[in-house]
Amino acid sequence: SVYGAQHPRTLDARVLGARARLRLKDLDGAEAELRRILSLVRPEDRLHPVAAEIRVALGSLLRDAGRGPEAIPLLPGEKKADGSGGQAAQALAAWYGEAH
Image (cartoon, rainbow, N blue to C red):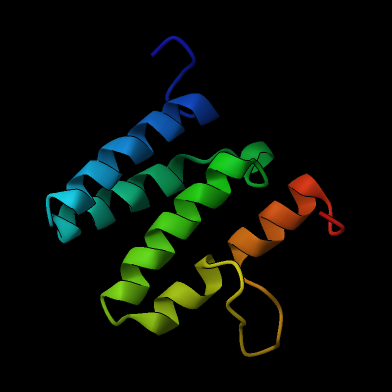
């Protein structure tokens, strides 16, 4: 890859591949790929919208598979036990600002 394996554009391209696996009903393959992609997000990019997209895609897959407790920390709008939002909600709020 021109940008490198951990660059947000590279990760975004890999998310497209994981979404294709979802459309083909390869849920295990999609989950494994999304988890691999998420593990590649650099600490300095954890608030990037692509990182939030990865968490939302994985969280949605888990939620739809009936694995809600695993999905809650990943999805925006979902609330953890302490009432705070999930990782994706926090990342999007930080990137775009609370007012948007």
